[in-house]
Length: 160
Picture 1 (cartoon, rainbow, N blue to C red):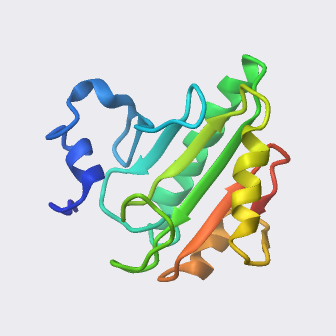
Picture 2 (cartoon, rainbow, N blue to C red):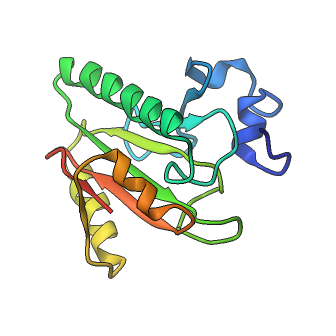
């Protein structure tokens, strides 16, 4: 399902961005280079269909997004970089979560220069929320319909 007012949906249909924006495409997931990267190699992993957060996505789409993120993280690891993963999931349409748009997307950032992880994690902690540790991505379903910030620093722990 496509939302005609969504920037990501436009990009996925190649209306705005053209074919050159895709790093990877599958039936359910696309990877594009971030339009405002915080580090070289910063990518966005997004469901093709319009969904406001991965918590609101189907179990299969959520699992595929994190599986692909894991594969890309492994590839960066072969080059000597650990990665940081983040999602600012929007609960319902019009419900802010500091996201640039209301289409689910994981940020995957290679930690290829000093300070990137500290900057992102300090912003996360500055939100004032007490972080919860998730035992796995399936626990995201507990946040369905709510805004949240997901962060997985290089230590591999999932915080929300």
